[in-house]
Amino acid sequence: MDKIIVTALLMTAGVISAILLFNAVYPAVNQGNDAITNMQVRLGDRMKTQIDILHAAQSGGVVTIWVKNTGDTRIVGVDSSDLFFGPEGNFARIPYGSGSPHWEYVVENGTEWSPRATLRVVVINFSPLNSGRYYIKMTLPNGITDADFISW
Image (cartoon, rainbow, N blue to C red):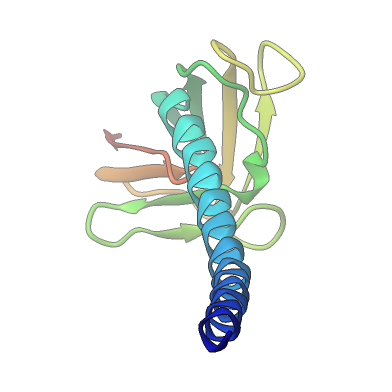
């Protein structure tokens, strides 16, 4: 009879331990799975995104830069992108919107920056630029970048 009671108590303790272990481990495994899924989505987005700086021109204190979406996905949040511009070795991040200097954009051949569409970025500096080499780098919100040097 003692063996039956001891066996029943050990089985009850084993079941309770298994339930406690499951309740502790399952949320962590589920959370890890969500993190991996989100990382795969972001990585897939980065792999499908690509841009190319095609050309740049300047007139007085205004620089116009054409950037093409050469990837396979639509690019959203362009105004959250970072634009770096300036003389070689002395460039700075140019904010979007207002202020001096700042940049604005227009999608040239579409209503959104879809694949094969070109973005016209206008950097408004309010002072004429000197001749020399200038650095341009555009970084999208997902981290994709393209950079180029131009001379005038």
